[in-house]
Structure formats: structure tokens, C-alpha cells
Length: 143
Image 1: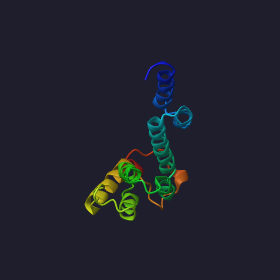
Image 2: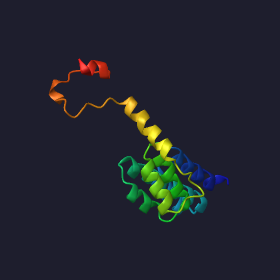
Image 3: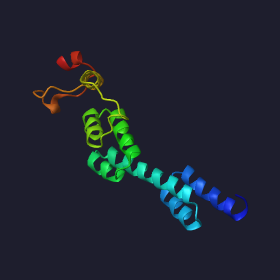
Image 4: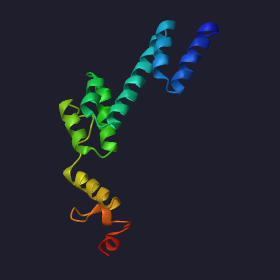
């Protein structure tokens, strides 16, 4: 496309490059760029899914997916990437994504949880928090 249409298309693409999905979708709709409108709408949906997943709401993310299998796969993969394996497997089962989302074995889940506990030191429940000034290992904590 050239001329004015080419400029308009570049404006929409620039908005998308800067993750201004709503504005890009609105202008694409106004200017009749149906393909760009769809691209912006999909990107907006996925950005919204990311936002609600970051807040811990898998149910709302699934509502945003609205039967879109690609969005469902995206939700499951995002949950797996953040270590929320149980939620990911529930999404996999509920949305019937067995062919597109691999099953996470109980061994992998256990290994990931163990790795997380090794990364983060948890205080024993009997230790009063007001007595702990600094502890960088279990040995230091025992002193």
C-alpha cells in the first residue's frame, strides 16, 4: 500500500510495536485494516491474559480466552513457565488441550518445588520473627 493508506498502516504498526494495542485496534477498525485489527485484538487479549495471570486469577484468564484454543494453550504454557503446574494441568484438562500441552509429571512438579525450597530459606514456625536479624543459611539460623 502506498500514499495515505501506507502512512496509516505504518501508524497502526508503530502503535503495535509500542504495545498500544487498544489504540492500534481502534485505528485499524476506523481505517479498514481488518488484518491489523485482528492482530491488535489478539495481542490485546494476550496482554490482558498476562495481566490477570500475574495477579493470580486463572479463572479470569480462562474467561478472556473465550474458547480460543491458542489462548488456552498460552495460558497453560504461561502457568507452566511460572511454576504453577497444578493450575496449568487443570487448564489443560478443562479446555481439553491434551494434544497441545504436555502432561507435567509428578516427578517434575516435585523437583520444581524442591528447587524452590532450596532457593528460598523458610523460617521454622516455632522461631519468633522478632528475634531474627539476619540469616543466610540454616547453620546461621541455628546459632
